[in-house]
Image 1 (cartoon, rainbow, N blue to C red):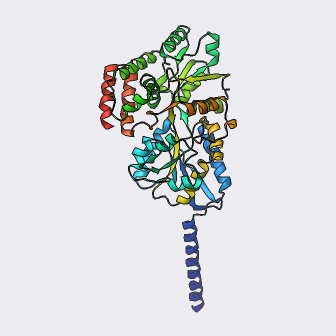
Image 2 (tube, rainbow, N blue to C red; image 1 turned 180 degrees about the vertical axis):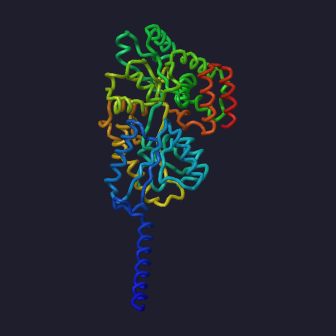
Image 3 (cartoon, helix red, strand yellow; image 1 turned 90 degrees about the vertical axis):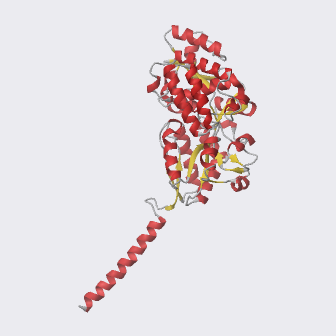
Length: 427
């Protein structure tokens, strides 16, 4: 009996020891690869498509080589322009369960949604440490700053006012690429008569139609007055806004019939396949053309600024910051330091189809389009994108998307302008 009690005591002590060891393992979270999961870095984005996913994976690979002790989780959520990801992110942020870092467009999407809500940590110390204050354009730093504090690190610059076209279609039909709306409609009519869809649109998600409309707004208003729309200094009943709506209405006569069942990649593919001649889309389309469809710049497809926006650059910048309350802020800053480095930007952007946010990146790593975009970015007047969250708060953008979705179907300009003016009360 004494032996039994002794054996029981030994087993009890051993079980307590095992429990303690297991508890220690759980707190440190050793994963299958032997890395400490307490330092797991969750990178939240919507980069799941061709080009963008390639760029993200290349960036993660670079980070893991520099910091092999940190486990990385690619927490990308599929959905064009981040529609699904933003909904998931909002739920997590409101529930005080932020990812380690997340993709957010510079401008109002960052500042109105998360900085104003007190959900982000300032990064002024990181900018000082990395010497970034003169490596990013001041206008860009201003887009990610509030009251002198910097809240995120730009990884890229996208241009959203680009007209892409199938070179073979234009060459075979002896057409010149349009630079004005009059030229656009002249070319579109000739293409339509020949049975070729002039303009590809995929508005299964409504942001793509908003994207086209904001290009027209920029053309008719210019960057200064375009900006006044979002501050309430210019009414949506302005004659130039009405003119933009009329142009948009006419454009809709030249789009593909199945536009509502297609996303932006599907629309771009119509241009690539020669089923449509043109597409107005941001230069992430270039990443899709080159990486996924294996097309060649200025051989299979060409590009010009969207009609009447030459000299303007509609900016979309993807950025990452440091949410309040994360368990591994030092690891997040390590990732941000790689993301903001020349090496990080030059490994990411050639694959993504964007250009680097830094002014000292290696231009030789970029194709002809990338180098052209860099030159235009440095010399053009910049304007923030509405469709991609930089120009105005999310609530206003949601109402604009709804109004445009109705307009594409009903084409009622008066109703559309009334809806925009009503939505502007949210500004």
